Amino acid sequence: MYPGNSSHIFEEILIFMNFRALLLGTVLALGSTAALSAAPQLRLTSSALGPYVVAAGSNLNNGQAVVVNAANIGSGSLSLQVSSSVTWLSATVGAAQSCTVFKTCYPISITGQTSSLAAGTYTGLITVNDPNAVDAPQSISVTVQVGSDVPSSLQFYLAPGGTATSSFTTSSAVTATSSASWLSVGLQGTGTYNFAVPYKVTATAASNMAANTYNGTFTLAGSKLADDNKTVNVTLQVTSSPIAQPSASEIDLKLAANSIKQTVPVSIANSGMGTLTVSSATATAASNGTWLTATNNGNVVSVVADPTNLSPGPYTGTVTVKSNAVNSVTISVNLTVVAQSAPLANFQGVVNNATFVPGEKVAPGDIIAIFGEQFLYSDSPLYASATPLPTSLGGSSATQVLVNGQPAPLYFASYNQIDFQMPYETQAGQAVIQVVRAGQTGNSIAVEVAKNQPRILPFAYGNYGIIQNATQSGFAVSQAAATALGLPVAHPAKAGTDYLTIYAIGLGPTSPAAVTGAAASGTVLSHVSLATSVVFSANNPFATSVTATPSFAGLAPNFVGLYQVNVQVPANSPKGDSVPLYLVNGGVLSNIVNIAVQ
Image (tube, rainbow, N blue to C red; front, top):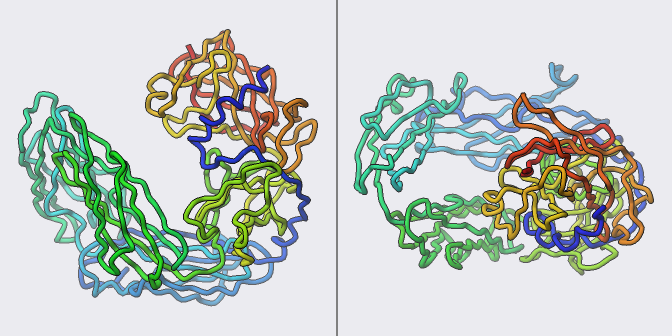
């Protein structure tokens, strides 16, 4: 067994996770879920509408309301309020009526006064709220394309052998013809009645194309919207120079007035040839002068938005990045400033800290992330630093997470994310989660809790698992994946020889029993009580999956909420750079991750 081998690599693991304080603990006793059963609980039949295509000078849906139904899946009754984030969009709530999805629905009629809007794409939010309901507020996004979305011209920069794409939508399906062999236009998906139809433009520079400027066109015909039917000029510059490629070309932020600065890093990659060097980053705010700043450290640009002394409302700006690339880079920044309020947790914003999938069940003892806004007014995140793990972070303006009304242990807190441990005492069923900041209790959201819900911690690239090759002291990933992830050591596992340490959460009760918030003992091992096995699967139908019994499955010594499973790679395991692997824990399957097996 290798139960003690986790500590020397865990610093590396933390680089790829959204938390950094696992060596922590405290003890809680939780009540029942009575708070949930005594409250109404909001559900919407849709949370996103559109994109709708609207001719210039016309209103959304020809002036007819678009209806989304709200329902109560809890007890009591809903008292709904609706509001809009933009002036051109409005909504009203109708009387209760019978509907097919739920027994009783409240129709929300949404209208869009888009006739005065200039050509372009617009998105507004209808917020549906009942302050006394669980899972409220929720939002309905409405996206409208006014006039044609087809660009008048396009420009691509490519190295020989490179490919680039651009997208647009049309009001209805079109026929597309192109004048150049390096240029193509294809349908990217499907659309229905008044929804936009997506198309993708692809430019491809053959490996033997000389560095030069190439001109071409594509022509669209057959759209119901006359402005879609046109010829678009396309320029392709094939170059041996660097080509700057930002990780984000548009940044959307939402901050409370006089709360915190928000920093967004944007990496500038080189999709061309040679060596890219970023020389400067300059921010320009369209209004109110100095709320937007930018600096660069090498090829990483830090974009900073500061809502200090800003009134609630929208603000826009740009960041111009200068480099030795053949192309220029401009990043658009949109900041929405809102009034300070109680913490606001997102609907389905409580997720496990492995897969982060909204709506998935969680388990007692899980490392949990909750997403929202106004959780903590601190420019820098706060981390718990010692055992026992505290139930609040932030000193005089302390932030807490309540699970069924009781404080839970916290790993980490920031403006829009908190990582906490789901207490082991939490009963199966729905649990109610709230965030408290400086004595202000936020809205209630629900999450489904199961006895166990195994989840293997994955890296981001290629869905490789955070799985240590314990025999060779490295990660069990391919060398290509290790390079992409920036891992210092990669050792693909040798079938029949090497042992793996698999890091996971949600494996359920242990013996001896785990204590909420407390670090697992480094001397007395806590074994998982539920039967646990490891499946080495196959990428093709001709290979057979192999199941292995772990030599150890339990809590990782000296850590909180983290499990480890030690297993030898079977001699007859499928082999390759991306071998699917998953756990079966108490009859429940985990997520599937990849490892490299030789």
